Amino acid sequence: MLAILAGAGALVEIAHPYGISLAHPLGVRQPANPAGTGNGAATTTATVARQSLSARTSLTGTLGYAGDYTVTDADHGTMTWLPSVGQVIGQGEVLYRVDGQPVVLLYGSTPAYRALAQGQKASDVTGTDVRQLNRDLVALGYASAKALNPSSNEFTGATTAAIKALQKHLGVAETGRFDLGQVVFLPTAARVTSLSATLGGQTGGPILKASSTTRQVTVNLGATRQSQIAVGEQVGIALPDGRTTTGRVSAVGTVATTPANDSTSGPTVEVDISPTDASATGTLDQAPVQVQITTDTVRDALAVPVTALVALAGGGYAVEVFAPDGTRHLVAVSLGLFDDDAGLVQVTGAGLAAGQRVVVPA
Image 1: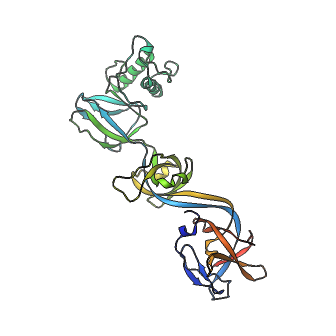
Image 2 (image 1 turned 120 degrees about the horizontal axis):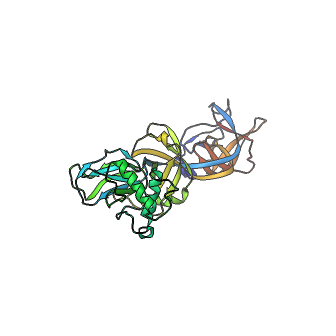
Image 3 (image 1 turned 180 degrees about the vertical axis):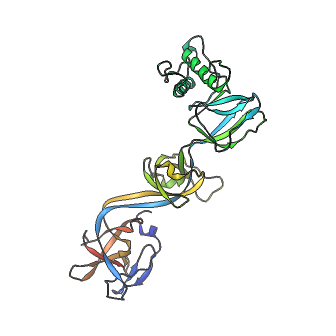
């Protein structure tokens, strides 16, 4: 919540011994008299302090998994095995089978688009797809980094030998090459979210959709508030079971969009949040959560409890200072940032200083 009183809720006027009205910006009826005086309502005092204050806002987010991948296959056979929804397929494992033959998952951002086979010399077959293939074969243990440079983009004899080792493990013909359709590259392990193909059906087109196994919270933030949040900022996450955890903003969208089915909310940008402790978020997918984001912070602010505020009949606000000798007097104040979590508000006023005592409801 931004640092203006209007953002804190409606004011409620209450009788006060000075003939003015006491107002709590959060709309809670609380009298403010010294104990045992005035209208008899119980009161106490609080200390004016200098400290940091933060304004926060709560947004609705969606808890799930990062990434959204669609796996397609060329029209080259009959679908004979498919994973189940929710199953996780890792690197080097079978993603699905066509005509009984495995289609293997490997990690990489460049999709498979050609047959991968050794040429007459290493420089004949090069590219990003070859580099990620070499890296994966070393990572899976089918070649050593000494025998096969994992950062090399050349298809060498060592690449051929490593593919044969993988094919032996899979129980298929050891050809030392991958024809198009025998391997699928995805950035991470694939958590299957839906199936498009059916057993016995012909391939050609979408086979399945998958996400990563990385937990993520997504928030659609109003585009006008984009500047209020930055990558790396810590946020609070209230989970569906009532528990809370923390996270950090991992990405803030730069392109605003308007949901097709919602013309009232206006343009939004996507904000991605990585939970600090992924295990604390459980396994729920597409679950609603509340995300608490810090929208503003002030340091070394003079702060009093929100309940200490007194609304003056002529306008403006004051706090009732309780002096050591037992006397009381009002000090007019200007309001700054509200920290709802702490129940404090930033104030400035002539003669008001840290260490003074102000009257608040008991």
